[in-house]
Amino acid sequence: MKRLLVTLALLALLLPCLGGNTLVIRRGAAPAAAWQTPVTDDFNRSSSTDLGADWTEVLPGGACCEIVSDAQLNNTTDTGEVVWDAEGATGISAKQCVCVQKLADNSEYCGPKLRIPNLSGTGNSYAVRWQTSSSNVVVRECVGTSCNTLSGGTWANDIDINDYLCACVDGTQADTEFAVWDRGTSDPTGEDPTDWGTPDYCVCESGSCSLWASCDATGSGEPGSGNYQDCGSGCYLGLYSGASGVCEYDNFSGIWYE
Image 1 (cartoon, rainbow, N blue to C red):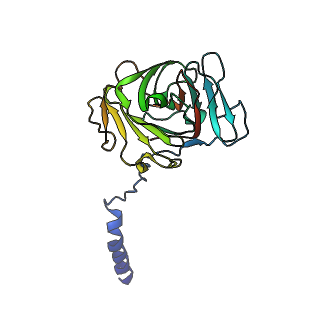
Image 2 (spheres, rainbow, N blue to C red):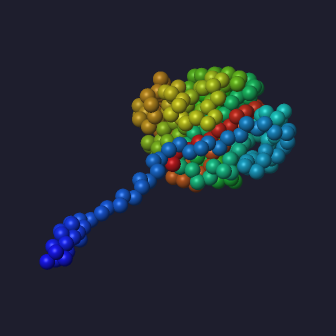
Image 3 (cartoon, rainbow, N blue to C red):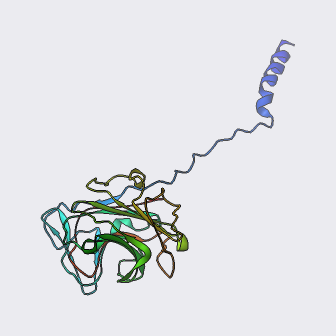
């Protein structure tokens, strides 16, 4: 009898475990989307016409650029458009940013290049450049090496020597928006764009941008009109030189959101 009572007591303890209760093991949540570690280059290496393995020079007719004085990237030609594409930045999303430092006032028609589809210099992309002679910054849409300034894409602002120009693009087609910052001499390398504060200028179709923090000034255009590059992924980013002047850059930084 005692053995039977012990057995019944054990069954009473075990029955809840043997019933229909289910133990659920939750999988870890997927990593939250975030700004990725930037690709950077301070160009602090020996003077050379070879920019290094992470770069591809795109220019009709041949190579264009050189490292000068262990500190800067210099475009040595004033013919056509020049794009440097960071090889490590392939596969990036459409939400991307580029910053670069201006080194000289004779550095004209220069700045970030965004949503570059390939390394051949063909296809559609965007550029944001300073125009020292006219004291403004413009946002441009490009087909191959031919670029046009967006409607509403001209910002009356002079990028001074040693200032950093930062530009970001997000959205697709008519919802494409640009945000532009003049960071002064504050180096943005290693920062997220969320650290840059309110953009100094934005360009979006309605003139009321929604993908970035409210801008002090906006231009009303349609960045996504036409067959321009919206790139969901697989694009590059880099630097741009227009058809006039010589570009002198330092401290490149490219970053994207995944």
